[in-house]
Length: 141
Image (tube, rainbow, N blue to C red; front, side, top):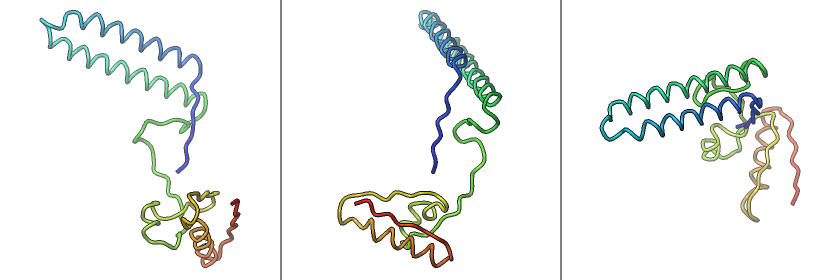
């Protein structure tokens, strides 16, 4: 699994900070009168939530305009990327890894002494060679 860091433009961050401050002020002023009007608090909370969602949508749109489509996405949205995997030689480890080690990537195997790092690496290299591929094993210990 790869991770990506997206840096938002300075204007977007300032707009988000402004929106958060305004929302906090609204919430504070509405909370002063909550004892006698609980129904308005839930309606206000719904409005606040929708305004926050709009702010997030605007920020995402601005980032996509500046950096391109797909540069940022909300959690749970978007397409799943099919990644080819290579077996490690251990069925249980392959299942834990979601099918094996990703193909075409540099993989680091680390752990305490005598934990089976070299064995795992050599089994994985053997699996790659069985499928006609090319793999390199670098022992840095």
